[in-house]
Image 1 (cartoon, rainbow, N blue to C red):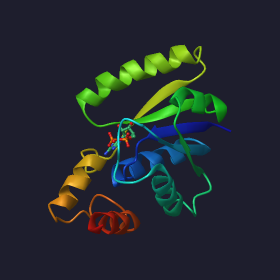
Image 2 (cartoon, helix red, strand yellow):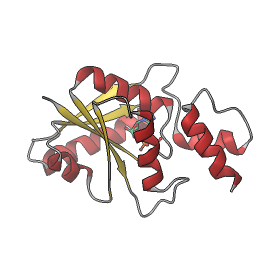
Image 3 (cartoon, helix red, strand yellow):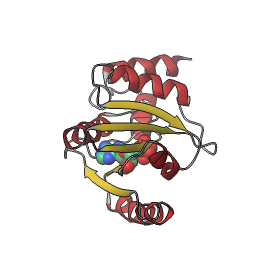
Length: 160
Ligand code: ADP
C-alpha cells in the first residue's frame, strides 16, 4: 500500500493540479492532497474553502484524501506515512526550486521521504491558479482551466 502526499496552495485547484492527481492515482494506492496554509499569503479562498472544493471534486474517488496544514510539508508526509511527496513541474524555474525543496525534504526526513515530479499533459502544463484568477478578473472565459464547481465558486467570490 503506497501512500503519497501532494501539497500545494490550490488557490484554487485547476485542471493542471487535477491532471497531476489523476496520474498519482494511477501510480499509487492513496493520494493525500494537502492544502498548505501560508500566513504570508492571502489567497482568494480560505483553507477551509479550498479543502471543501477539492473534497467535492473527489467525493467519488476513494483514493483521494484531503487535509490541510499550517506546518511543514515533511512533517505531514511523516504523519500520514507517505512514502513520497508529489510535485508537478511546469517550467524550468519550477525545476530549480523543486530540486532544492526535494533535497531539503530528503535531509529533514533522514532519507525517509523522497520527492516524485510529474508533468501535466502538455495542454494543461501552462495553467496556474494565479493565471486563472487574472483571466477571471479580465472577465474572460475560465472554463478550460478549472472544473465547473471551481468556476462557480470563483465567480461567486469575485462578485463579493
Ligand atoms: P501554484 O504555483 O499554481 O500556486 P500550487 O502550490 O497550488 O501552485 O501547486 C501545487 C503543486 O502543483 C506544485 O508542485 C505545482 O508545481 C504543481 N502544479 C500546479 N499547476 C500545475 C500544472 N498546470 N502542471 C503541472 N504541475 C502543476
